[in-house]
Length: 185
Image (cartoon, rainbow, N blue to C red):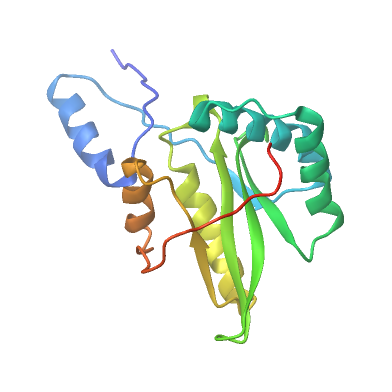
């Protein structure tokens, strides 16, 4: 009897999982879900706003004003010189994850550095390496456009995210972040 099992896997582990299942008499049909990554469009506005609202609540316990967030997301689409969103979609082309890229001029490097902000992966798509796919897409896009580098900041206590960023070749820098905000959320 052949049993098909859908298992989300990391590519390096495919042979190991297959071997272990074969030892138990189970022939596995391992299907990897395919996700696409691209620059988001205005059609993704509602998904992006929803992600920002969920992220603020999940990560910081903050309930943002939906209208303020809607206006903030719209702003990026009407001012592409400030930044853009990158989105990942499942096989059915439903949005699964998003991140925001903001542009910063570096006079030391005579070019732009892109800051990665507002990374959010919908709950049902977590642990599927979507951020890795999005980062690799962004990394190639940056290199193709003569961008000087990628940066992001991460909550100091978020060790899993820090490990993920390190695994992608990012490193901690010597700077600490200071801020003085003039408006609340």
